[in-house]
Length: 219
Image 1 (tube, helix red, strand yellow):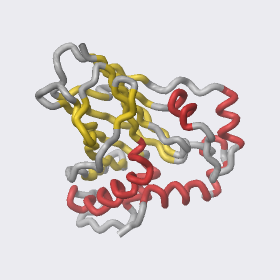
Image 2 (cartoon, rainbow, N blue to C red):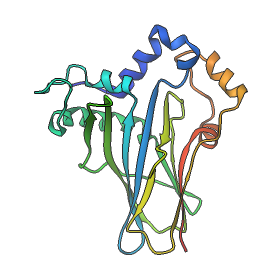
Image 3 (spheres, helix red, strand yellow):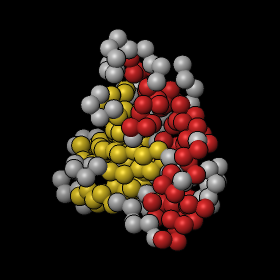
């Protein structure tokens, strides 16, 4: 079984000859995502359900060597060991998901056991599905979920169509999807000049500049 597939891919891509080109300086992996915020009947939010579609380069690399009965096609069962390893590895990175409720940070528990992989043979892309429950269900008038990689090795962006939904939320709750601000020229130059092993030095800056956000306002 592959150990820490995400970290392995990042290190391999970072050391590859193409990684020195402007287009690949940072990031190295691209994720397009959809998310659901899942509520309890009492109006508390209990979990974030992610579907992350990885870029084709990562997807092909990640599925190389996996046993499958049909060439170029992977069933959910065949992808399960890879999904297990990916979710286990994401723990080291806090699942790239951060939450505040009513202005205060709230913690997640480990993912539920419903995680699984899906492979689109036509597009050659891998999707990872997993659910992050809050340690304690949250009653919040103001809830913000941020998805980002502080090192900016992984770029997260919501899909253009139906990027996020509320599931079972109280009437009157409004969801807004906040997309990252356009990167300024100075930051682009800074990223280009960084070595493959360097990290940006301010997670707060990354949060405000590059994070994809879900913002929920409830009465």
